[in-house]
Image (cartoon, rainbow, N blue to C red; front, side, top):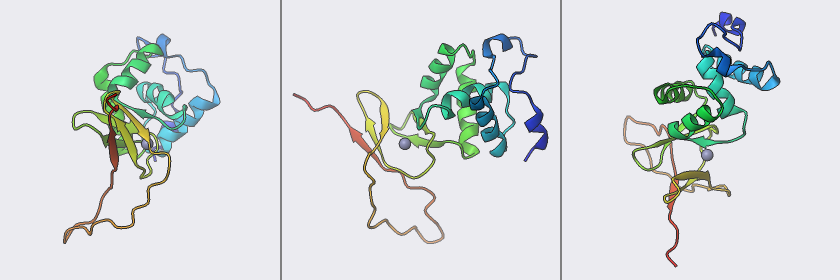
Length: 161
Ligand SMILES: [Zn+2]
């Protein structure tokens, strides 16, 4: 772990747009900062701004686009590319789980445990399946391989009336 990282203040007033990202020194920010440090990530201004949106609001499923819009609404002026890169860094650090629902767009889940999802095709939304889904039988991995992950996404569409 990078010990020095813990000394980096939550508010970095050296940047040109730091005034837009004033982080009050509340418990949530502290929690977020600790989360990043524990995951081996330097708590940069961008990571803290996005971390606050991701990790202080319960279990969430976001896309780069939806988080980008939230960041804009929160006056955290970050580029979509920065949001995307940060989501990937969070995923690599184990803070998020990436779920590819429709082949193009990835969702990022703040619950990194294995759990099944409903994908609402019309609404382009990912939600957790409420009841636990028990697997009584999963396939053996091919020789020389192991199962790295198991994703279950049940695609839903509105019934035609
Ligand atoms: Zn989920």
